[in-house]
Image (cartoon, rainbow, N blue to C red; front, top):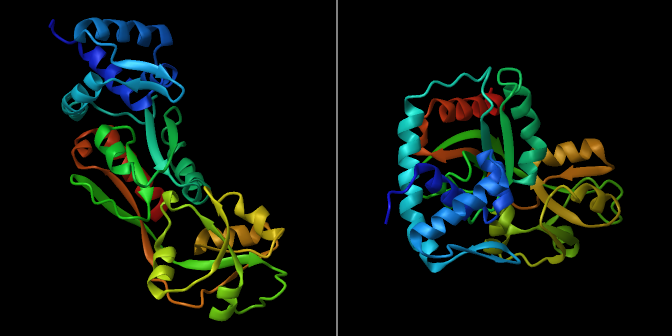
Length: 297
């Protein structure tokens, strides 16, 4: 097989991660025909279709799945060597960084990050990826994201961690709830109807404690995101468990009230995670350091 061009490797890895020619072109800052042409060359080189169009996007073939780990790791090593010897000027850079956040992170942390970064790096692009807690280890390893902010520990080898925030859980409900005043008892908690955010959001510590304590409650609504909760709560008698800072923000914006939980849930850390080897890149190091400053400073 002829030697493999580095640009073709980059297209292959990006297309494998994105599963979309359009999205791959956006990430590579090239046109869609350029990606399609590169894919045609890759198919000739490997004598395989590599990707097949489906309703879910560009699905990799068996051959593509076999070669992906080696090409991904090789590309990461090459990029790391190049980045470690490349200066980074935030004032003039147009680089794109990708940050995985929950929707809570978007509401509570993203404004602070942008307010800190944009004055010193006005032309960089920040792409926020909706966090899926079961995939973040792979995302960091493959370079799909530069960093992740979440409260769930990420134990994948080679991942760096820095605590940026300390939090605790509280209960949020309608200010004029029909049966709960300014104190929430365990009996009231159990008798009430609850809204729960899906575990994939990365916030599940309180749910784990409830399970360990054997508390049985009535879950009436499960939603994928936190952002819809203020409107739901002010028009219902539902209760929801939230981190204190975002619950307080919701309370300021809507006729809601924050109450302490009737059982103890340990406080938790919100941390920034990134791939250890990428810190040799001046751009990556700048990105992580400034997120830490924005949230912890």
